[in-house]
Image (cartoon, rainbow, N blue to C red; front, side, top):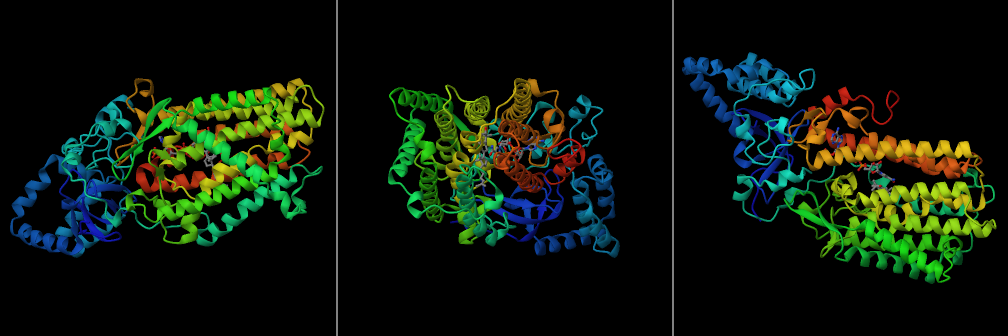
Length: 623
Ligand SMILES: NC(=O)C1=CN([C@@H]2O[C@H](COP(=O)(O)OP(=O)(O)OC[C@H]3O[C@@H](n4cnc5c(N)ncnc54)[C@H](OP(=O)(O)O)[C@@H]3O)[C@@H](O)[C@H]2O)C=CC1
Ligand SMILES: CC(C)=CCC[C@@H](C)[C@H]1CC=C2C3=C(CC[C@@]21C)[C@@]1(C)CC[C@H](O)C(C)(C)[C@@H]1CC3
């Protein structure tokens, strides 16, 4: 394992790409494969720098002092430098990091009191990535697109990686190379000369910095959620069959212990997961590439979810045709929930144990705190795999998600049985069809999951294992479960209004997700050329018009409108069927703030600029 010159947390001077100017940065990590340090500037902009572009504070001071002595001996040289047009331009733009760096370097090289003041000023200057001329031409009225001269710019984009859209060729000009976690597939194809030169040395421990600050209320929060979430699921499951379900029934009257446990139910859950696993490994469907990982690798995923869904539906239909009574799922709901909980807990323990031997660059940045409970909850290993079998992807997209539809279908049969109906009620049909559409859409666009937060950033631990295998199938089915014993007849106009609401929500959800996916996969797609972008120092851009110019999370807005349409068919007699809506608001608001922090970390001042322009997070003019 190579020894590192700079350690995580070290304050050092980092050369600002494209210049000979140095700026104080903090070391965040090191990628052993590419041998690049991830550093953070004072405004939060992160870049990856080569070792030779970094200097320790002491050697920098020694160098700049000796330079300043030689500069003071040769004033002519200083004058000629300041006459350089590029330099003048850089200095004239006090809002750019290059300017800050220029001032910092100037201040450092003249250790006078005036110089000290300048240095301080430089450190306070907000960094803002430069933007290129062509984009300004294209969008002359776009206030985000400022002109900046930098002749060295194209040279410093020496990674050779395709810069996003054509009009943005130079937008990542501050990069020595693109950030490794860049989701742009094109960028990966174009391997930089620099990357090809580097040896494939194993990543040293420094590649996975310890997670700070902690999310979800920290260590105590993680313990709380680990215990509370299953208790809450049991509460919901026990409430839904009550004649008059209410929050006031907490704690609920518990059934005898035996009622929670049925080995047969466990057998069915295991069978279902194995069946889904078999469908997943079948060599049917596309092998899709995930985003570029810190290790420099890209994983491949078998995205045959839609096929798995169709086959599962066929098997369920055949089973019903053969006389299998699927209402078993309703009558054994509690036992099935407990069995799934047991499996998710065992899986989480396995995931935690194996994460201890995961390499540093295989760990999620967010679940690597060193605290057992926190890391167990949040997930330590980013992409745990058994050979090619990706556990996180499989659990997120298959048994729980397809299971959700199977359970809904079984609940519709249970409603018919319990209420002596020839066909399910309109409310039940709406809930079933709406949620089926949601799941089928997710599976049809399965590749898109590869650029979501869970797949890109979150480790696989208890939170997701429990979420995927227990939370989704047993609480997302609550509306259908509620309708089994709480009929809510709908008039045709109300039914039509709910359908319209669902379609509006679905349209916003699908269009906005597709726009972002298309942009991340191929930013130079001509279909997206009308969209305005803010370049960032990572080389990626942020959409600032289209759906992503309306609010910062238009996909959440669509999702929330759909959630409303799922609860409305259940009426207003009880709060229970509205639980999903309430939970979802909390989940998405929290997710939005997690994402805001992550994007702020990644994109620094470009993100601030995006937030200044797109002021609302999820609901236009409200939030
Ligand atoms: N039903 C359910 O239980 C749940 C459903 N969901 C749904 O899943 C979907 C995915 O959600 P989630 O993963 O949370 O988040 P997003 O799909 O919204 O992904 C967020 C990422 O998008 C990128 N991004 C943000 N702003 C911009 C912009 N202006 N231009 C370009 N890229 C941008 C950033 O990543 P980068 O820049 O690195 O590409 C950011 O980290 C959503 O539709 C959500 O509603 C989510 C959670 C639960
Ligand atoms: C309280 C708790 C344990 C929360 C865990 C959260 C998970 C249940 C959700 C996190 C992100 C999810 C996504 C979907 C399901 C719920 C979880 C796992 C999703 C697969 C549903 C279908 C969508 O079309 C989707 C693919 C966009 C979506 C992705 C995120």
